[in-house]
Length: 472
Image 1 (cartoon, one colour):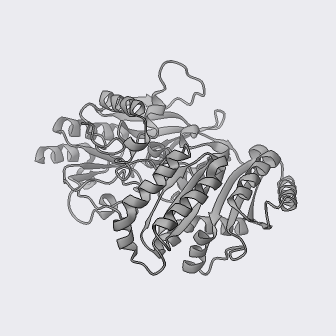
Image 2: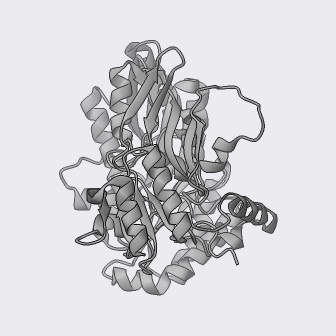
Image 3: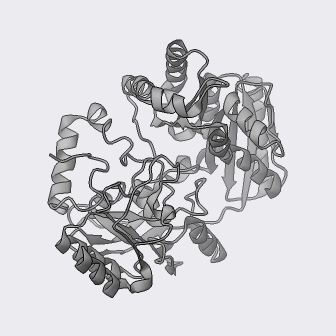
């Protein structure tokens, strides 16, 4: 592979082909589930350099692992241990290329950090609504490759729904410029949708044109205690009826999930912690005024209290208080990590069936593993739960993960299938769930997916083994 390394250096410069030193930032996944070994880490600065890198790797038969911010949850952008895979890092391609105010679009490099994109568009007077906990380090290319969700899917949809065009380097090293910001284009197959959610297995996303929205006149946040998941689902329906499109966030959090935040981050105030089994975080983004938004919220909560859907509630008085409430919600994954290794599930269930799913699955888990602790939280508004399983109090978390993960995953995923859900709502499949996919996806669907993969990447060089596992 000496000749390949030389070609890569010629393509992007010696300083941007890394083969020695501490490469943990590129070779280890965010959750520290896996540490691989890359043949090289290559950091191109332009689409043309990406194309040159892909051509060189294709000719040498070297597998490529595209990587954005490396914040994925399913080991989808981490090299394996073979030392054969080239990590293609897009972090240097981090610019906002263009904002079109009349068309309400923004075009950015794939390596543009999500928070930077939010800030640049806000400074220009627009809203880019994609928001998730890793927004300070994840990139828009990675968001697209995994079809990331986040906290505002209820109003604005997943990343797929926000994308109007892509620029992609194919497995052959050709550049497809599909960055048009058209909202209507019926000239054949929608190639854009092939690459979104493909986790780097079909092509390398290098740029994107995304939708923008007007900044809301006011955004208010409320935190409500609810007596059950059934009440939370009813509250969601009431909120949708009362607030309409102004309802931009609806998060549910179980008491144990919140207790971990209080335990590991005692400086944070968790409202109603000991008073209720679940809390809900609601966001109302109004286009009229703060007074109108607050009146809507107060009317909603008064009705919910009368109907017994809410036992107590607080509306943030200012931006600082709203951020504090959101910070509690976003601290749950960090607090859970501080509690010890755990078994994560990113699942989606029809909203109407979530209470029954949680009741049945919780009972099954506790009967199989006495003392097991359930960290249940997520985006109830779009049916996405982070249904995580923690070792019993005082148990060995690492041993629990290694000894019980297969059993727990099988139980949870079988329940997901029973309730017509999905084993991956927003995190993707990666390597972590590739073996599970054939058990939860129809043979017809898998056959079409494999046909697409082999048509676009016949050499199986782009992120091999991820999503579809072995193609043999």
